[in-house]
Length: 480
Picture 1: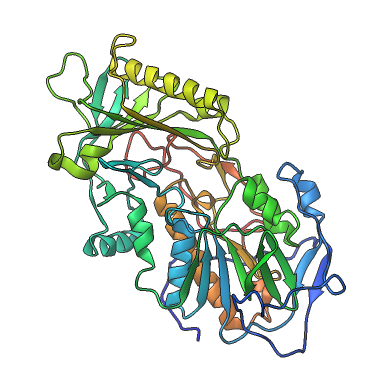
Picture 2: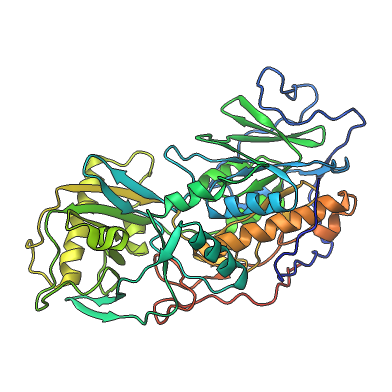
């Protein structure tokens, strides 16, 4: 059953009624069957009673997306609704957790083979083992609600403050440390274990992974999900907690033109991650000891960030090998972008060589003097970070009973992702409590305008100046 829960002070105001796309109305007086994951029992729409649509291509224009017919459910929300959350990054996990706090069941679908977390990725390579945070490097906390979450994670032993020195590294090896305030946080054993542990105490959340939801289909007052033709259950509402071309393809023929249109307006950068393990410590000419554990790199075309995972995660416990994560600039990522699912060998070699040369340049080492790493791996984050934002914590279409959450709605960091998931969870729970008979009161973000998003190539870090140009979201006033 739904329950009341004190939530964020962020106020989501309804959209005023404007031009509506064509609408398909779904209603039924038949008894409802509850969601099931038994493929033999899950009822499927038939060719006679469903509206056929083909998948939309990710490059179709927003205008064409907006012309697809709008789904409108008219059945009342049941007393015990269940939500499908597609995406198991921080936004999706936070949404599931806070739906549970409100008494709402959910299933999280995630494509992760090794674990949940999305960009909270940690790679461990046996047998040494080698350990790398290969996406999100650290995070800060400024919003009181997120601060409270982080304190809870610290009490559980999931995160700790990163006490190592970080700063800005100018080309040629000139390093300037940043102040120790605000605190920087990292996962005790890397970033991914945070995500994998978040749902460990939950009772109303189911996780399905690795699962790649390929189709959303509205029928008889519910959403039917499938993976390459295999039924994955039916749900009272859906949450899209991922982005990029896969999300655009999924929404392209979903019957949610306003949500699909907003998702297509999102612009994303591409960033290469180079993981490299060295036998000996790296050196900066003219220094007795290496001056930092992490650095925002300035003036180098191929490198925007470098961090010593061994020192960051293991501290003095390990004298080697030395595992480093190097992240490229967005410009370098764009210039060398390829399909990330199948990176050509020649591109891997080119990017590895180019980024290692950038490391030499950043550290002020003579050309070809950097020691050769005994292990390297490159990964392209093709949809790495948002470069624009509507500046509203979540998007919700009450007629289609579908929402979006993600860091890109308000920023580009872990905190923004968590706050977005929380906002959508509370907003949907309020909608469910209303019974769903006043949908226009709960429409939010469907026509909000986008603006450019400032920040470092690896994201925003509120309070960490001067590196981060923090994006400040004004009081929420959804546009009409």
